[in-house]
Image 1 (tube, rainbow, N blue to C red):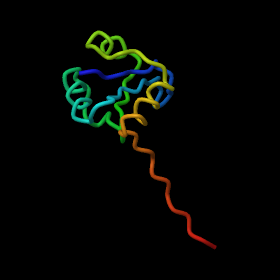
Image 2 (cartoon, rainbow, N blue to C red; image 1 turned 180 degrees about the vertical axis):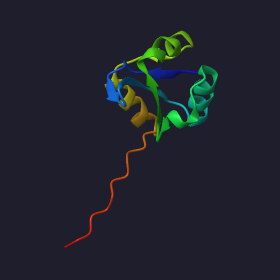
Image 3 (cartoon, rainbow, N blue to C red; image 1 turned 45 degrees about the vertical axis):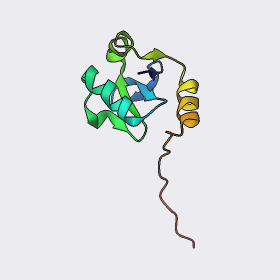
Length: 92
């Protein structure tokens, strides 16, 4: 099982966050997150949001440190990337 984590660099809700992803399956990702004690509500489309204070815990548990760019590439190459849905605009 290999999951990947980028450096905590994403601000939100008064914290800084990392993204935890798999390049194999969502099942693998959910299993890793559960072992780490990360609640399922932290899953967003194709990744888990991990607060900066849990980054070292994820690495100790086996997450491989990669850049944010590599996280996106891994998701695209694996076919696991899920983009945000943009609301449709109505034609005038």
